[in-house]
Length: 322
Image 1 (tube, rainbow, N blue to C red):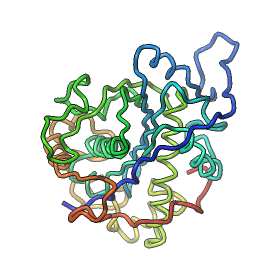
Image 2 (cartoon, helix red, strand yellow):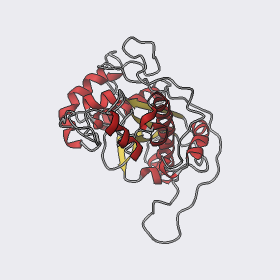
Image 3 (tube, rainbow, N blue to C red):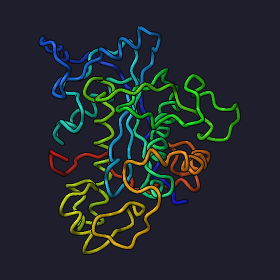
Image 4 (cartoon, rainbow, N blue to C red):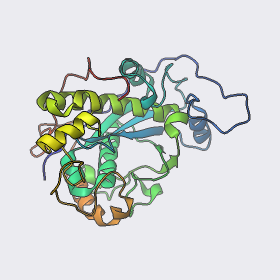
């Protein structure tokens, strides 16, 4: 199977007090998307006994090309309010997201971004690939001695936990030393709009988007016709036009029904929303996980980076609304 890019290793950083976050609206209404995230949910979970919390979010799920990426930000009860400006990455400009990265890294106990390549998405499906990227991010922080007690996952579907895995047995493995695939996942709680409510999840979304955007900018320099520097692999008009003229390239998700590209295979999994196929794909996903090695080590045979290593994603180019 084609090798996947090893995700950047998680890194722990010094924690510094940050500016205050916005308070809740005085009106007795359902929270709106414009409300800024806070640590209110995290503090309640910590009072319930979950000391180390991991906020997790993905980016690139609906793209036509490139990897899917999952960010994780781990905090404990000693962290102060998140850096000013942290919110869902889609609501931030490119410049604001990039400026937040070093501040988030200093604020978090540990952080990482994991990736699953377009080839892996084609082979095991998007849901299993999301899990693979999430496990790689967790492996990176675990390699630094940080194992979360609970993961806060954005959305209403737990794509991180394997169907045969019981949450309370997470990270127990089977006692064998057979690589990263033997490591499970922590218990997971899902929350709709968590990236707009929880500072840890919003911070994870920022790290994931900046990292993936940088990868797509690099790939866009290799394949300029698709406009990835601006659209990051999503279905923008210039991307669709190039697909119609040139067809897909090495980095497209060929198992999907790519617009304007007739004749490609139409497998059971096609597109970003295939939870119903998860059970069929899990054996393949398990095989991938069992072959995983330390995600920090790009020198291991079979784990050479599939995506190019780029300078750490700054400066980036692109529009503020991608």
